[in-house]
Image (cartoon, rainbow, N blue to C red; front, side):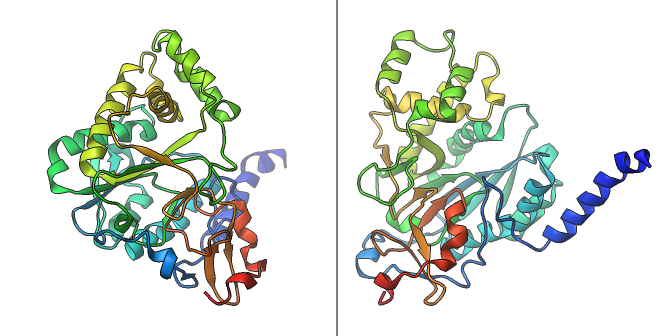
Length: 349
């Protein structure tokens, strides 16, 4: 009997979870949250003041979206989410920026994964890259720079994003003009001020910094200066801007990732984020028009003041009444109960 429980019970449990979650969203994962069939049940408010941000030409073939995917055998629930949730994410891209060119870097050993078959269904170009022990989050920066060395002149704007937790609701490219380049502070409430923002050394970034930035690859005086700044964390999951500006930026960024990689830090998750924050706050990008913004209509990291009204099906920020354009981190925990919110102040929108 003990033999049965030891070897077969886990197997039956796995089968149960697979059948149960196969056609469902998985709303209880803390990192990934999806509980909507967007865009079918959302009414987005981009009227009047909420549409003023769309003042540039709409998405077209000269707009480039850069993704990167590598299979990671994490857990049953994670992989089930990826198989069932990623299609909704990619649908949001095709619904909102249908004319953009989208590419995805995929290491050779991940090419036969089911996720890659889903990616191909959305006419996304798969660019095969060699296998490596480097984390794909770090490696994509180097691959993006190498790609643009050859292809930059084919494009005018670029959106460089994480693969599995970005939703796009409106034409994000129509908010981008010449010389623009934006990245997000980690703030959680829509505001023109940097409210509810996360400080770098009061989060997981402190651990990542200690793990990746040692005395052999940093300047001690720079590190002291960086820490005294009490910097707000900037997340590197979304960059969007003019292609020339982005290229100048990613050239410096990729070179420094390689320079600081004296102990194979490229294999570590979080390495690219601590290097970016270090470079940004110490002025390495000062000659580039790179602007960090908080939680705004254009884009926001895990917003907490978004509401969905079941009666009107309106999906808006509580503060402004405007609908989001790009959301990073999928659907935060607070969105799960959106249907219980009554947005009486915005019923006329």
